Image (cartoon, rainbow over all chains, first blue to last red; front, side, top):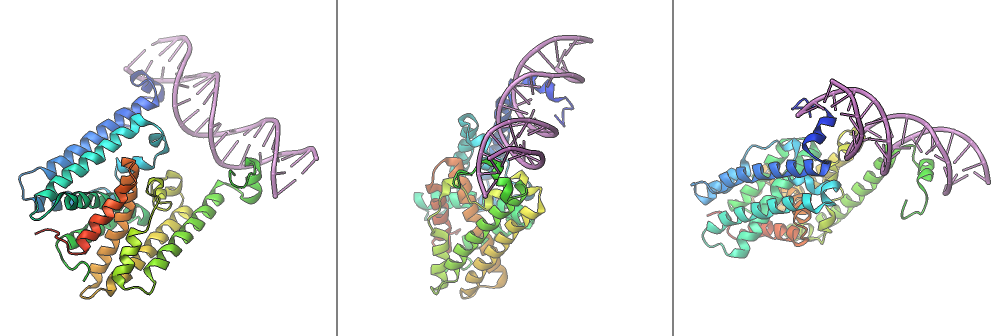
Length: 157
Length: 157
DNA sequence: GTCTATAGGGCGATAGAC
DNA sequence: GTCTATCGCCCTATAGAC
């Protein structure tokens, strides 16, 4: 409404109800986010660089993840039609990340799968930390810590 | 109201407004969560075991983190009195985790700090993934992936 | 396709009896 | 300290003019 400048009543000319508006908004958000991630994760660069690029991409940390935050929205949770695109987004994102990990030498399927879950969770949690601390750099610190251990830079002795 | 069996009107005898009820609820939740984490992270076990125990503690993943989810609640975000305990929770939790990482040999301050952010973010993101996928084991997979790389079990070549 | 006006329901809060 | 009743606001949705 703010961007288009139209009033609240006019919205109902384009969408029959809030539910359909939410569906459209989520579909656009998910498609956009997946396209961005796919671009980074399937570029021609070496697997290692693609992972780092995905993890360290600049993000508006204080805003939170536009998809991940939906998992804490009651309106979305209660509605399968809104829930499903969120599930698909994370399924596909994890699959994309797993495929990159799988390219690394000596990586079995379980290993790449678990690391993909960890990498995607790390980003989501980084958003949460940045918001909780009101500190955009929190996400960056979390990512740096993960990259440190990925680099084998002294994990546990 | 459900647990106590009292009606909505009676609530206002004990709390002047929704704000104070929220404050009390958040204070209890934060204190409880911090006490649990502190118990695990400052026990007598070796640092490595304390970290693993904190990370792998059984969690109700589908319910989400009772503190972390507040970062996506508009009512909390808009209110500094509600926001502050959430910030303190994560500040202290990260400090506790950092202290344990710092015990590991060859770990400088930046390294322990970044790993603490990563570990706490990983748990928060694991909750988000479990909720998004409606799959309690997603959090466990993320934790396992992180522990894999912490163990130096082949990060990046 | 846009607007204004308004209905209907839920929620936060208050009033006052017991 | 609990209850019922009710006010007032916001939000979703509808009606109908232009």
